[in-house]
Length: 310
Length: 249
Image 1 (tube, chains in turn brown, purple):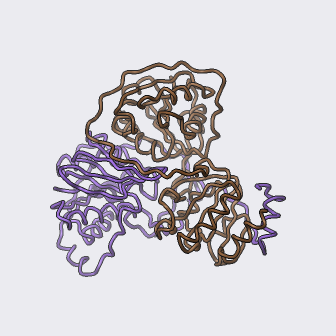
Image 2: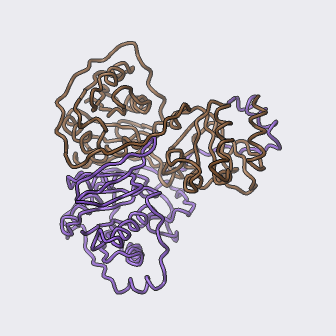
Image 3: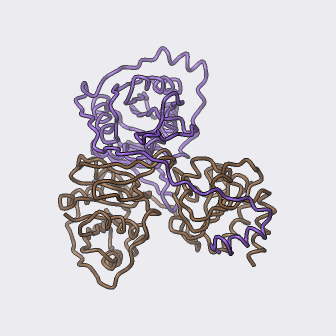
């Protein structure tokens, strides 16, 4: 039986998370098919068809899919679920919102945020903020799975293009309506896939002081993140938050500035290749996970770092 | 309008958990247990909506062992009017909990169910969404603001690039994110008042729900350990090491 990946896209382009999810799908055995539920989403469908390893792209195009409302996208996936042994989506705000509805209606368990596929029915996933790893086995006829994208490399865009087929769109649930969206537009890389991340915590002190963090990020071509403390204090927007309940990241280089290193924050950065920490407090737990630590004042040391980077 | 708030008893989020040597699970003996922090936020929201005159009753429900009563007592002290304990010693996975909550909702007929977005033990982030699907209700997950008006819930949600706002027809399911509110402290007078409020007890069998687990945990292990790092004396040394040793810049 085949494997279905519910693609994340904005109708015009495919999101990177879909590529990591396809890689996870490839470990489950079976042909990979992609569902694009959107509105005027031909371009996204085309991009999906060009992913290496994909056999077929199913497109459900209707106005009520324009904003990826969970009730509608889930219903569309449920309408074709009978053909698949596995249904996957990325473990981000998009996938986490939609997939459990699919699992419940199919009367099967969902396996959330897998980091490794051991076999087509056995998976590893983090629990307790990543302080333990559970290996779980599903005996359900369909495995419904969300994928931690940092656990899988993105599938390549192949030269070959898979077949694109239109499927009948399910009706609008009519119970939920999109009102507005407020997304930050930034020239910087997105946190989820960034190779270098600079993050600030409570120690940065103010929204104004975050400007120096931004200068460092610009110097390194880095994405910018923050700890919960900095978001709660109003220094930065909520979508900058990294941690157990924010974004999970795994860059080549993670620089933590004025971040103490609470369990919940570390949960979001543990898989980074190299962690650097700058903090005034020699006892800050961040130094226990950092590969390199500098004890000192962020306000003095960050300008020095910018200068040293040349 | 009645609001139902499911609350889960979990290992306190400050506890440094230990994996059992035989890999069978987490050592929870003598470990501090608390209400899941996201459920506290969900409950606070229910109570605030009642205080604002949008709801007439807030009912807290918990599924699990008898000691889950403690979490229900806390819920009553925060401001829930009544508690329901669905008592079982069986391992409960999200699908089973969603089915139990559906059975409770069918009896209680709430117009709004608010849950925490995820529990800090299994980090599953499924129960609210599953419950909404089983009930055939709309959902708004990761809520940072909830406004009830004209038979609708207008919910602002935190999404990956910022925020979005949805309008849901009631009845609906909302899951609470961190910034929905800051829960109040439980005061001693409220804890005393809570003793007069009722907690009714039921079981999965009474509700006609099978709670058989679908996922089998084969083992629980420690995550890969990072090698110990080094403190470096100054920025110049740091940059040199990042360039020449770690080779990340």
